[in-house]
Every structure is written in structure tokens, then in C-alpha cells.
Amino acid sequence: MTGLSIGEVARQAGVATSALRYYEKAGLLPAPARSSKRRQYDQLILGRIRIILVARAAGFTVSETRTFLRGFPLGATPAARWRAMATQKLAELDELMARVTEMKSILEASFHCECRRLEDCERLLAAGKPRCPSSVPTEVGAARNPLRRLRSRGSGRLR
Image 1 (spheres, rainbow, N blue to C red):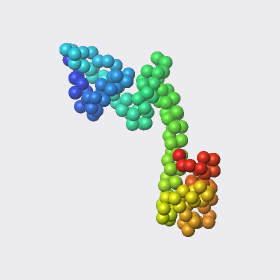
Image 2: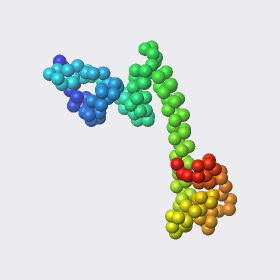
Image 3: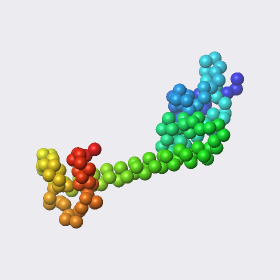
Image 4: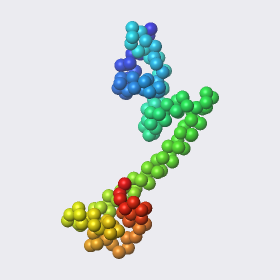
């Protein structure tokens, strides 16, 4: 047999041999032929590995990548698969970006805290004040103040 060894495939694809074994176990790669109990891959496996790497780089989980590879009807084109998967992933990324923006606002608002003790912060937050009175500009409202926005959700705690 003149197939590629797992080491050769790993070197050519730029991944660890353990990643190839994992992808095989996770159902992303087909089980290769074996010669004397050693994996022997066809050269074409490199294309499959590159598709897996592109999907992973785009933020798809192993499960989502498996769906892309095997979860569509037999005649589904790669373009149709990408569109379907990308539409869902883009919506997830929009939600994540909104969450990251809110997290960043909370962190930036916290830079202005002038409390000397944690208990002072707790008291101010429990009283509905966004941060220390001396550092709050009067024009800051709920729309610009993420801590006030979080308290207005009813829980009164940061999540």
C-alpha cells in the first residue's frame, strides 16, 4: 500500500497527529485503511482536513463541522451547506458581539470607581447608583450606563 502515514498527513496539513485521531473519532474524517495496524491515508484526505480547518477557523464547533460534512442531503452543494451554516453562525456572532460590547462597557464604567472598600461599591450598586457619585457625569443615563441597564433587568446582579 502506498498511502500516507499519519505523520506525513499531519505535516502536510499542519496539524498534530492527535488532531487527526480526534477528527477520526469525532466523525469528521473517515477511518483510513490500515497496513500492519498503521493508518494509511489517501492524498485526498488533505482536502477534507483543509475544509475542517476552514470550518473551525470560522468558529464552527466540531459538532457543527460534522453537520456540515455529513448532515445535509446527499445532493446538497457545498455552497448551499456554507450558506445554511453561515446564516446561523452569523446570528450567533451578532449576539456574541452585542454581549462583548456590553461587557466592555461594564469594564470601562468600572474604571471610574473611586470606592475605597468593596462594601462601598456593594452599597452603591444596591442603592441603584452606577458608580461613585464623584465620578458619575450627570448626563450618563440608562442607555449609556451598562450597570444601570443590568439592574433595570430586575436581578440587581451582574451576570
